[in-house]
Length: 464
Picture 1: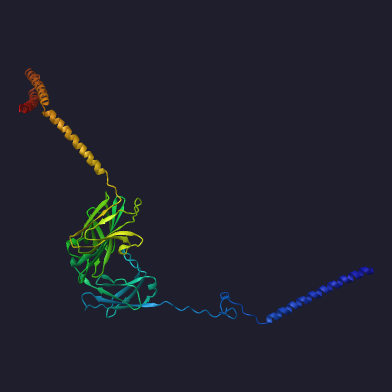
Picture 2: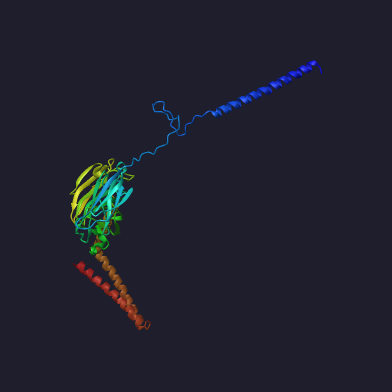
């Protein structure tokens, strides 16, 4: 081998040896460094739910160190104490202990709602020896939610309810109960509200009846012995009322234009239900009248000026005339919507058998032309009959008419005489039997007698 080749081989071998040595030192250094890192203690990392640092706050971020144990939020729910005092309305000696009392919370009832709103909370308690039921767990949140509370107790098979109140700390509700009675003389209509609205060719009536009873006892209408109340408490509507529908407290049936209501009436406790019906209207003025069968403390009539009638959305020309009422107009009257205008008539009282009446003028109904057409046709027909009858009278009773009539009668008389002569000849010749001859002869003689009688009457008239 030549010297240059040997030298080249030696250089290559030297470079390879240097590469292996460098690689070994590098691997050894990394291994030593890893062992040193494992031997040193590591810092704790923050948990994922730890709060981040707020640069605008002096509060520590809580990142360094172990996160503190989470603490439960304090219970902020507060309760109210409500006390229900159950009393007997007429017998203070009655025992009212161990009675279940129901406490309900619901939103306030609207002025046009026939039924009470559904309760959003119910609690139950038992009365003690003094007739007191205590509720310590009434949520204070009822106040902020705008709910009202009332109590209900069942006594002698009848449910008695208190007036709803706004809940408050240490609230107290007095609730009276009564025995059953059978005297209907104390039944009273505390309020009758009638809302009148036009629709197509009808007036739509929505009545809210509020009933109560005066006296020491509650009355179950279904238990009254008087035959008048066999179907229920009769409430008479106008005779022309149609499409009658009843909803709300109690049960009801309708016969013709009479509503028969069944339910329980309790002293100092109002019962409200709704009656809807319609009456046809054919002109711009409508008169309404209704008779009350029970003492009525207040009658209200309400006519909204805005309507659901697409053709006439507003009644700008509407007027109300109501004798014995206080009439007014404006927005939000009687606790109604403040964004609507109304005509109202209130303050009317009525005794049993007394009626109330009101009239609406300026309704959007054009007078019908049918009756006028019928009247005109009737007048024309009457005139035609009169003229024709007069003409016939003149013809029958004038000189010329009498002469013409006598001539016609004489002609008919001569014909009948000729027929009788021919009949006699045929009978003598034996061409007719007895029965045929008698029948034919009788008919001809009867007609002849009538003609002679009429001829005599006309001659008497002409001679007069």
